[in-house]
Amino acid sequence: MTADRHRPGYVRRRIGRALLAYAVALAVGAAVVAAWWLSR
Image (cartoon, rainbow, N blue to C red; front, side):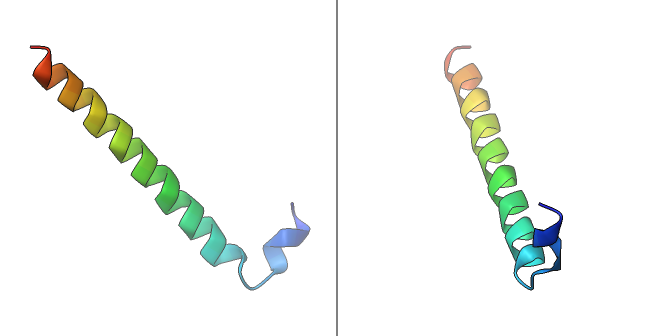
């Protein structure tokens, strides 16, 4: 995993993975809020 750090696409792939994780967390949060809103 440490050798992968020196490749050119490492930073872009890491940013993409962070954005993907953020999008998933946002979707889960939105689903929880929607479920709470509908079940009030």
